[in-house]
Image 1 (cartoon, helix red, strand yellow):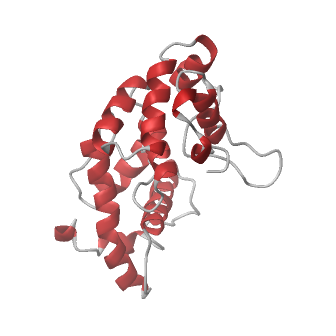
Image 2 (tube, helix red, strand yellow):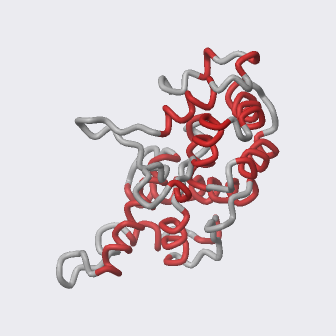
Length: 213
């Protein structure tokens, strides 16, 4: 949030490029030492500019394409009480419906309500636990609200099964992401020989009451 600096934004900055520059700075976090690194958004140029989640922001900053619209929406997101559902869908359209980017922007807005997302990974877990819910190519407010609702519903069963007094939304998110990583490594044969991805963690979610989701 320090990089974003939304508390200091003003209405007259909309269209100037200042707001988009701040948002790009809050995305492109790559420390030269330590582990400060943004792994929530695909931002590197390793596979071409077209595949970068925040491509629309970079192009707006460099060419002015869509700059006024983007900065208006970003200002409304972080500095006003505008309806978040309408903002999500309009901003999604303006940025090319990049779900990791949209979820990250909303995560910065309110880390107690909104979680980051990598659709392929979370869809893998949802399929494993029998949920008929998919996020891939579904970057809409309705889908994102359901995603956060599922994570919220898992907090209590995770707390009960782990004998914890309280589980935050980010804790439920982190657990599912860990499980997704284990399932991917199991599928790739990257785990220790004979080890299953669910042996240490997956049972926590598998035993949660699905009817409450």
